[in-house]
Image 1 (cartoon, helix red, strand yellow):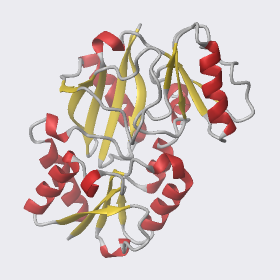
Image 2: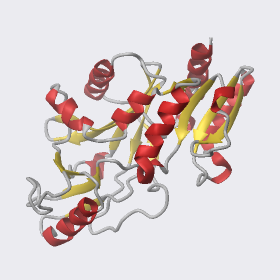
Image 3: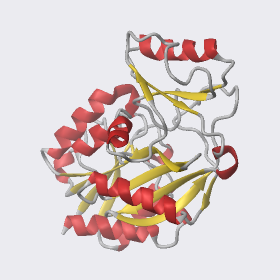
Length: 286
């Protein structure tokens, strides 16, 4: 059995620490697992029994090409998560869908190219500006209520580049409490971590593939677990992996993102997590 762990050429050694951990566990189960760069035209994707999307962190700059790649791979072998899921999760317009479905989502406004960059409902409070297609907190800016010009300039730059923009109020409790990321494997909650706040007041844009994170193990509260379960139920068919990121809101946890394409799964922060993911991969192979 051959498995490709889809990655990007910018990742040192082609696999991050948890990618290597998953590779090790798969090989222990008799699976020939190896990294493969998603946009390498020389990769014979049909030669693999299954492709697991892992560290394809450079896709935002070539979103359409990434989705075309996913569709092409799906025609010759099994891809997890599947191509339609990748298309949904890599564009944060999905937050509007979740909110419409009654899920507790961080309040969100989406601005499309041609929109007035200063005309959004959160311009008078501390807020966050980010592209709808982004990863690793790149091109994301935290702006204070007195930074209207800075905010509008960043929104304008993104809109002028043809990118849809997501604007959300900054939930200040994250600075103390942190963010909770709930990881599910094969549709079943596996573990969770605490992510310290990343965006500093007045901070600049992230350099490199992703922002450095301060991570520690965390037991989600019953309410956080319930919200994550509602999100997983909304997704329907159990996915190989899913990560639900929650922020502390004034009335309880709110969904910040649902990561189904290339998220860090923090396998090294929970005993047995890498084994659970490897076992789930093997079940799909069989």
